[in-house]
Image (cartoon, rainbow, N blue to C red; front, top):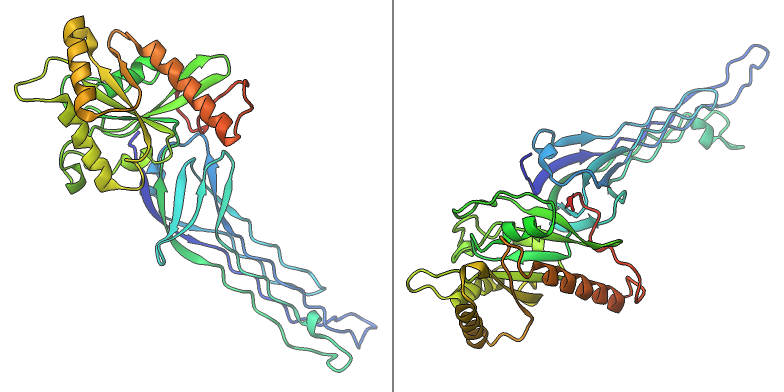
Amino acid sequence: MKFVDEAIIWVEAGDGGSGCVSFRREKYLPRGGPDGGDGGDGGSVYLVADPNLNTLVDFRYRRRFRAERGENGRGRNMKGRSGRDLLIPVPIGTRVFDRATDMLIGELLQPGQRLLVAQGGVHGLGNARYKSSTNRAPRQFKPGGPGECRELFLELILLADVGLLGLPNAGKSSLIRAVSSARPKVADYPFTTLYPQLGVVRVGEYRSFVIADIPGLIAGAAQGAGLGIQFLRHLARTRLLLHLVDLAPLAEGEDPADQVRILERELATFGKGLLDKERWLVLNKIDRLDPATLAQRRDQLIERLDWRGPVYAISALTRTGTERLIQDLMSHLEQCQVSSGELDEGGPATAGSGLPATEV
C-alpha cells in the first residue's frame, strides 16, 4: 500500500431541521392550538483514531464528507429526527489543521479517540414554542441553523519510541529487520527505503517498544536533495534517536565524522527541536572491520565529534551487539516512563503508541 502522510479534505456538518407551523385540527375541537414540532439537530463530523490504519492514502480517492441533515419538525408536536454523526477513521498520530486559519484543531493520539471537526446545525423551533396568553395562534417558527463547513489539512506523524537516523545505506533497515519482524527492503544501493517503516521490538514479556525507520538523508536534503526532509516529522514524537554511522571500509576521502555533521546540519535546518533530542551513536557494519581498525576508528570519531553520549558498535547483518543495544534502550525508555510518571518503578513496560506495526 502506498504511504501517504498528508491529505486535504472538505467536511460539512448537517444543517438543523426547521421548525413546523401547524395547528391542531380535530373534530369537536374548533379551538385547537398550535402544535408545530421542533426540527432535529444536524449531524456533526468527527475524526476517529483507528489503530488499523497507518496511512492517509484513502483520502486520495475521497475528499468530501458530509454528515446527515436534521429532519424538519411536524404537526402534533412531533420533533424531527436528528441527523446521524459522521465518523471518519484516521491513523493514530494524525494532526488536524484548519486550512483557512492554519490553526491546529487537535491531534489523535489514542485508539478510539474522537475529534470534533465540524459541529452540526442547531434544530429550529416550531410554532408551539411561541404560544402565549397573548399570542394564541402563532405563525412564527425558527429555521434550523447551518452546519459548519471546513477544509482540513491532515498530517500524519507516526508514533514511535525510538527513531533511526542516518545517511543512505547506513544500515537502518537492516537494523530494524534484525531486532523486529518488520521487513523493509534492503539492497546495496541508496534510497531503498522510500517511506517510513515501523517495527515493534519485544525485549521480554510485557516489555516492548516501537522503532521507526525513515528514508536516509543526504547533504542538501533541506533544499530537496534526495528524498528531502519531508519524513523527518515522523521523528518528532520519539523519545530518542539512534544515529547510525557506517564504519565499513570507507572510500577515499570519506570521514565518518563528516557523516554525522551532515545530518546534524539537516536536523538544524529542519528545526522543531530534533537536534536537541537525545541521540545515541550507533557504529554499524563492524563485521567488516578487524578489532584494531574498529577501535581506532571508533576512538577517532568520538574525539573528533567530542561525543558525550552513549556509543554502541554493532553489525545489523550478523546481529552482533544488537541484543545489548535493545536491552539498554528498553531500560532507558522504562526509566523515562518512571521519571515522567507514566510507569510505576519496577513495573512492566510496553512502550509505543498502539499504531499498527510489525511485531516480533
